[in-house]
Amino acid sequence: MSVVPVRMFGDPVLSTAAEPVTTFDAQLRRLVRDLFDTLESERGSGLAANQIGVGVRAFVFHVDGVRGHLVNPVLDLPNDDDEEQDGPEGCLSMPGLYFDTVRRQHVVAKGYSDRGDPVQVVGTGELARCLQHETDHLDGVLFIDRMSPQRRRNAMRAIREAPWFGGAAPRVQVSPHPLFGRIR
Image (tube, rainbow, N blue to C red; front, side, top):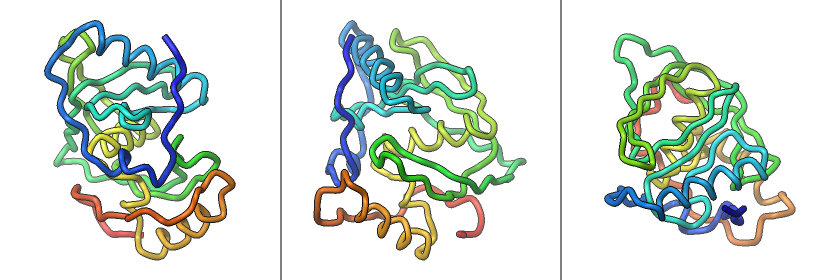
């Protein structure tokens, strides 16, 4: 087990969709342990494999006392519940910065454990935000991609001024997922 450096905003791995996991073996279990060690060290809520440079669909989370991981996650957004939350969101790949982002209030994430067993996580509030954020990472989508143009401009300004930012602004893409209502 080890703490692995987190890739910073601008690294191309963060805007590349991760590949599905096809083999549930000791290497995958080691990856999940490394993700947990790194998440704990960084004091975050969630961490996707591509944030440490591994392009597979796996992430870990620890929010409001709920700790877990998902491999090959898929989000289920209840059709009868379109309630949204709009509040501060951060990312270990953009340390120290938080920006208001619209997310669904309730989600169900389905996937597998690192041993291939089916897993379902029902999330509300901060856990729902985290599950959406980490699944987006695996799709090559950053949370600033979900912002309105004005919010994104303000976020990019703050990113360029951050001490960890290293130069040319990377490409910001439009999320392939629905924005769940009006853009703020």
